Length: 71
Image (cartoon, rainbow, N blue to C red; front, side, top):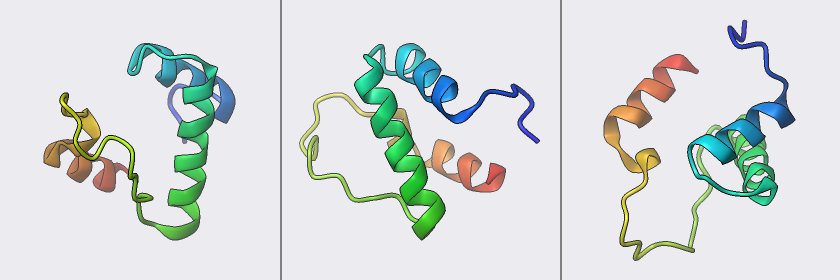
């Protein structure tokens, strides 16, 4: 059970604002990533940002492992 009791859209908007400091467009992308994960059980390959200058928390091995444990 979701301890925060947020539905899909409000949750993605909150993540978009708090983690990425971005607009509702980023929230839509987060929902697309989540749908892809639920359907395929893998994260979709992203081409954009392959040579990023700032490392994302999603690339952190501990975050990945803890996410998999949570799921």
